[in-house]
Image 1 (tube, one colour):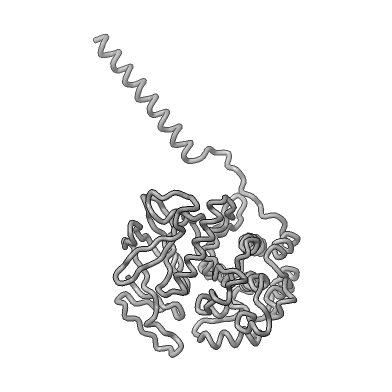
Image 2: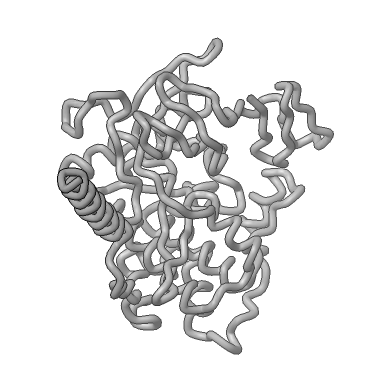
Length: 367
């Protein structure tokens, strides 16, 4: 096991993490499980993404490749994960799930997908009781890692990716659920071939609360300051709403267009970044010359005034559709699937073996 600092990303393998930055409380960093560790009957393969409230692992459960999401220690983190798991279970049971949201799985062996099944599991590790839930595996990398490799993607990829992300947020909003924590670590991306289009996996549902309960459920550490809307910091001036998640979508769009976060945060304290957001000191939008329409949409979406933004994620989807059209669907290969090929090969080998066997047997009878 090791400790990973959620602020400066320093790592310690002896659970004795220290940071020289005064703003960084490294000693409070969560413990991350390594390859081969077990949480109940679930074997850890690797950590995929470390978030402020939880960590997503690739894992093995009942000989199946799955995602395991474990809440960091603390009541706020565990309650947040419970809400997320309950929502994902609800849409799985009712067959309403979005392609780009986690496909919830029962947390224990031999449990079934039903309304009566618990949404999340519990397991002891050392002195701590950990809360977790399982979902289907998705082969991809975090958007943060993808942007590190290619800070400015092809503009069509940007549009299609944000469109798919916005459609996922629109589903949450249609169920009365607020995210309030959209950031590049909260989604995985994968680029399909033929044609080359991005698909996403929204691995985290943010605060996963409702407008009625947001005041009780909200806690600021869950979201990186650079991705926190100004109305969340000052709710007495503007009321957080569905347009708050439009701001989060806008930050993703803005960052993908300019190639850097709208509000740089590396080696800065949370308070420094909060002040930059409140004062609207973001990096300049430098794409108006080549992709003016999409650049102007990004600027509107991150406007500090809630009333100047599109008011919900569905409106964002419609605006992106006007600019980019429908996301191309993958063309079906003319070749049969791998499973079909294997079945054909095994069948041919079986036939060949039987023919050889009977021919040999016939020759022996002749002798």
